[in-house]
Length: 348
Ligand SMILES: [Zn+2]
Ligand SMILES: [Zn+2]
Image (tube, rainbow, N blue to C red; front, side, top):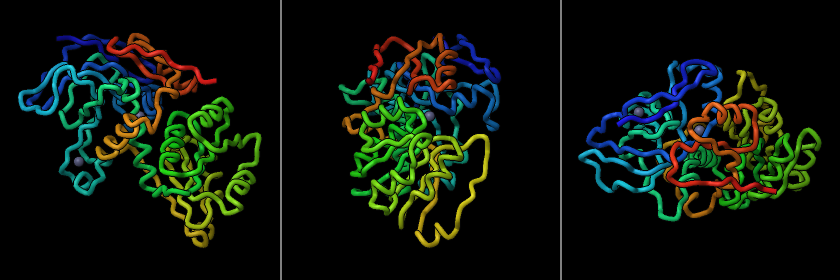
C-alpha cells in the first residue's frame, strides 16, 4: 500500500511524495491520520532555524486518526478504533527513561512525521479515544501534554495566582489547565486579539504589556504580594525578563518555551534568595503526561476546538507552515484525510 507524505528536503522546501507504508512489526499499529497539528517547532525546522535537524525530514507530531491495521501481537486495540498517537518512540531502558524522564530519552526516535496519510507506531504509543471525542480535538493532546508536565513541575496549587506570558495556542492551554487546578490566571500578550481569546477560555485578567504596566496590574491583582507561578509560553527573552520580578515569596518561574535566537537572562540572585524563588523549565512530555492530557480533553476540562483557527488539507502543508510562521490566527491543523470534517469556530 502507498501513501502521501510531506518530506522537507531543506530550509523552506517541502513536497508531497508517494511512498510505501512501512511494514508492520508484531507490536505495531497502522494509523490512518485524520489531523496533525502544526507546532512552532515544525516551523523552526522548516525554516532551517533548528541546528539539531538533518534533512530530508518528516514533520508533524500532533496526530490523531483511526486504526487501519494491527501487528500480530497487539491486544486491546481494533481496526476502526479512533486514537491519538504519541509519535516519539522511546527506548524505556536508558537512564532518563528509567528515572521517569522519558522526555529526555537518549534513544528517542521522532523520525516519523504526521503530515502523511498513515503512520506506523508501537501499540504503546497509540491511545484509544472515547466515542464522543473529536479527532481534531485529540490531535492537540501532544502540546497539552507539554503543558501538563510544565505545571506539575511548578506545583500549581488551588488558590494560587498565576501569570501566563504569551497567549498563543500553548499559553491558552496553560490558562485552561491552571484554571482547572483552581488557580486565578493573569494572561499577558502583545496582541489584543489573543487576549480576547484568553478571556474566552478562562483568564481572569488580561494585560497587554506594551500598553499597560504589568507590575502595577500584578500588584493590584495580588494585594501587592506578587504571583505564585509565572509561565513563559512565548519564545522571547523579554517575556522571561518581565516575568521573574512578578513572583512573590515562594514563587515558581517556568521557562516553558525555547528562546530564539539564543540569549542570556540576567537574574538578580538576591531576588531569588530573599523571595525563595524557584526557576525551572520543561521540554516535551513523558507518556504519563500524554495520558493526563487526553483525559483533560476528553473530560471537557480543557477545550482545544476554540484554539483552532485554520485547517489546511495535506496538499497545502506549505501554506499551513507559512500561516504559523506569520503568526496568523491561533492553532493551525493539517487535515490528512477526510475521516472527520471540522469547521473552525470564530471567537468574537
Ligand atoms: Zn508540538
Ligand atoms: Zn530511553
